[in-house]
Amino acid sequence: MSHSGSVMPLTTDKVDLYEAHVDTSQVDERRLLRKIDIRVVPWLGLLYFLNFLDRGSIGNAKLYHMETDLGITDKQYLIALTAYFFPYALLEPASNVILRRVRPSIWLSSMMFVWGIVMMCHGFLHNYGGLVTLRVLLGVAEAGLYPGIVFYISCWYKRSELGTRIAAFFTSATIAGAFSGLLAAAISNMNGVAGKPGWSWIFILEGLFTVLCAVASYWVVSNFPEKAGFLTKEERVFVIRRLRDDMQFSAGGEAFQARYIWQSLRDWKTYLAMGIYMGFDGPLFAFSLFTPTIIDELGYTATTANLLSVPVYIWSCIVTVIVGLVGDRLGKRGYINLILFGTGLVGYIILITSRTPALSYFACFLASSAIYPTAPNSVAWVASNVEGSY
Image (cartoon, rainbow, N blue to C red; front, top):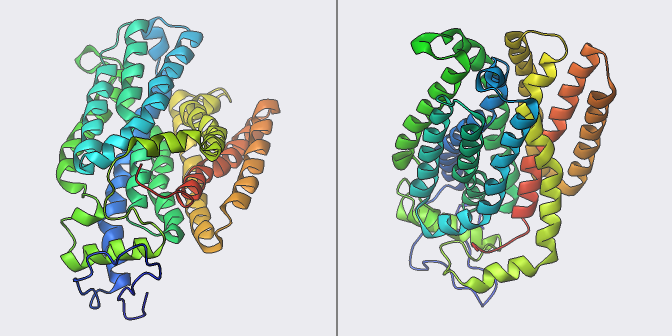
């Protein structure tokens, strides 16, 4: 790529210059990247913020007597949480295939609309069966969002730019963790309004806001680069050319072929990546669902426990951004993961063995500073080593 901003032809003879008749010499690369960053990343961050907020709100609601009101035990509560993950895990791959064949504005927004409705329904629960059913439906509705967003971002940026962008949108998960405690504490004051307990209003109001944002997303979320309406023709061509210069030859569109799916399923590296993902995803979801309970069991009241979870997530947000920047700068994402896994291990060992509230609270900071940065760093690592839309 030349310093003037124009894209030079690829050196390989196997790939023709994309839209060779279009002159992109006047496109300013830095200005274009800022334009994409502003239009693409923040709204995706909001979508994931709501995704994480809605998914984890049950942990906050539990502190306001949800179990007692529904007449369920701790074991039944855990089973309901587990039920969410079966459809969530099974439907993720299929969702990404659909995403490439359907406009992102339609697919991502529709998922969001459905899970917002399901969240609101949580506020009208009366028994254990209803809780399990709604958690399964929530898993179905939310399954494709995270992998869909990661894939969508990878269609816009070069490999060396992915870590920072994925970390930027993933920080919304830590913000959701911090905000959920504050929000739950505030909404719980609606206890008794319209004859409903405070925990019901947590689900109803958060779900309603998600539905409203989902409707807006139909117009805000852009299509893939080759059809992005907020870019000029020259800018769209420029984006595709720079991605192909980065050896992303599927940029600009790729026809679906079933053999691509089978190739990925037969590749041992797919299962290695799955193992890495399982290594941080389990602790990540457990932490988001149980942080309020962990702090509550240190002897604090429900509202205080929710408020004390806020600093933990703020710290996680800061570390996530730093790791994203370092990962893009050094490109040594595997070594960074080893450090993060070690740090998280120490944090969890302290949480398991400690009987001192202050030490356990410190361990929450230690564990979260490892769990949250590992997710975007690992996803960027895998995304940077694969090619093809399918």
